[in-house]
Image (cartoon, rainbow, N blue to C red; front, side, top):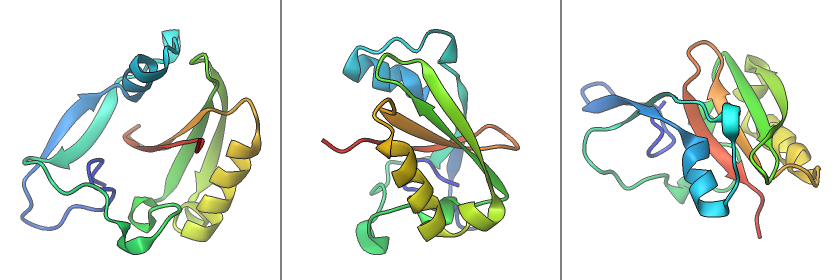
Length: 132
């Protein structure tokens, strides 16, 4: 899965594997302090800048980001981890079920941001923030 545009890579596309610390960017924007939860993990991106996520699929969980197992990690506004939810394939590959779970996680007033990662390799896929 490509972090830059939230879809799977296509044969022949030039992609890079890079280390990324998603909580670091969020912390800089919000003043949160993720402390020990500031993970660095692998992400795949296009070698050249791309158009980013396309709106053709509409709002909700990007179908291309489904997979065998995902973890949805919730974080508080101060940067501390709140919870983690293992999402099995039947839910992560169903955009409606995954979106429903994300909505439920964001209903918790303590949840400020949700990170979605692949379980097997720890790749960061995307984050969901509470809308303002």
